[in-house]
Length: 490
Image (tube, rainbow, N blue to C red; front, side, top):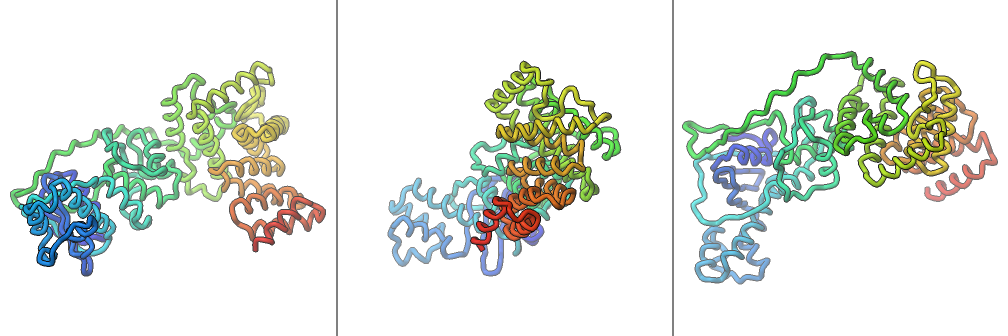
């Protein structure tokens, strides 16, 4: 069996050999580099390469172990056997050096995405030389270094099911992104949905998923297998892989636009974070997590590309930011306790059972959205901003902006609140630009937009907006100071 690494990278061959418990040897050729990796019943036992710095003698030199000139030309096996027999190195030390050698060889091979490979199921390692390495961690490390676009192309179907592994290795050293992504999957999910809730750009998310699959922390529905048993299956011992249970029957299809409309309407009447996630105030952490995942999978803005240029898509982005804020706060036991205390205090104060993240209890609701209700939400939002309660401010100002989308002040302050959150900072631009368009003669909105551009590092855009603000209000001291500061950095 043979093929090209561009079609079946070594990392995927390695995964397949482990999964099917094959025995044999994989030979890799890429330009002048040649390597052989041996397996027994799915276990990697040794790897060798013709690169000088990866020969075993180099690892003896690193440890300042003397090797005479006659020995320096011997093969790795002969060198190890001779030094061991003469008592020049202990068995434990030899195993450590072989482990280092195999690890370094694999680090090179796992990054090859071009070249040739062949698999010989009859090949066996007759010598006793063995190397113990954490192959799963090596494959995870290699995936982190692969080109994101190459990895993204290894996934052809965004609806492919990705599932968590029940007994994943607990000795993996995960990055922040890898740990976060694993925390977002508690059951089978479509690839596109998992990418959407990963918090990473599409290509980066796929690379993270790919690495976790190689490390056997996740499994995928469709694997591009390359190896097949030979005639009679000599030397190959393939285990029976349990077949995943059939997925449940899909729900009755509904008009996506109708579902989105109902979702946005429900959020308009949500009075607090619990209502945003549609859970009770006594909900457990697991119930809150499940509710967030269900909403994220169904209503993440990336699922509605056909609405990308519409106002509805902008509302979805704001809505998703809102449910994300609710999930993050309620998932933190300390923050949740503080939040619950605020809710109770507001209710005791009888402040019309004011919304902490949504509309007021005595509002007229979606069928009677009036200027008074929007104004109430705006006032609550501004008050929350002054108290540095940014979650409350964002939710209230979001409601005001939805109820009165042509009111520039509401849009501007909602944008300002969004800009206060790192995760929603980029969403702020659309709201602030809307305010500028609705009130082009108001210098304060252009100043807010300039502040956002400055914080994002878009200095030229910030300077442009400041110049326009000063053309409207030449005496605006804050705009003058910011402009002087930015021009000094040119």
